[in-house]
Image (cartoon, rainbow, N blue to C red):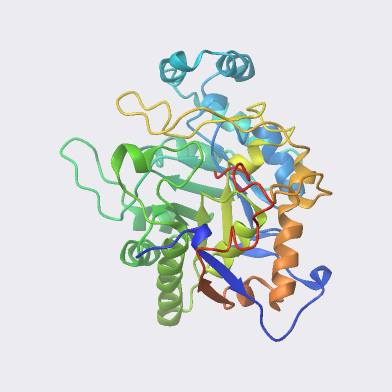
Length: 374
């Protein structure tokens, strides 16, 4: 049996803390973040503008270094064309868009645009391009490199492609390297031993992702996060080096973020909740990194709508009651109510299995349409 966000709830302790006195900062390797929130490396969520704004608010926007912003001089016109396409034309249109080669000069320009406002720059590449596109970004001043694929393991067997030597790559890379995605103790521990600074947890939980339906694989996020966090603790006891666990995807509301951290996450990576921001490049639309796959798309275009500014979504004030705005305020209030003074303390609160948590006593409320996952 494995459990997701809707299957569990958090148990208050014997002390409560004023939410204003709660510390929500976190670390990924040597990098410090004011809030434990990363923006997903998806073209409807993060562009250089959104990355700068999220950075100013204490988070970290991860740019897809193989996305539209590194393929086209003016991707915004293409996004406008995409979001008005009939549903039956979207998959083919996206596949055509992503056939355009990635341009090194655009990779460098995007990184420089982000850093021009004095914030950290983070970018994501697939393992096969870590030593090409990834190095271009590093030379341009990238602060955090994310190496990401649908399912990531340390050992990769192929008769045609060369395996990335992750241990050597981490040793020679001077910035934190975050790798994912995974969902088990064993794989996470192997990645940690290879020298990564952070591990992304989550296979297929996102709102725009169809991996679980198309491939039939995945582990619900609470169980996956707990297992990877156990690997982190065992690795820390053995080496004294702490690796960040980052729950990636499936979080719709503030309570889900709180549950992810209570399950052991040091931070979360979210997409759809941020795609609802006025500043997001998708104009209220969102699609996954594997959506334009030329052979087997594993994602779809979803409309999330525009709910407010990025600041309102993260810090409020909220004009909605469904938990999709003031996400950091919700996390602070949850931590204070549980007596958790910081992220580490939040990782030790009690969790119970409670499948009725969403509907117990709520017969007067609508029980559907309460937000979106990643």
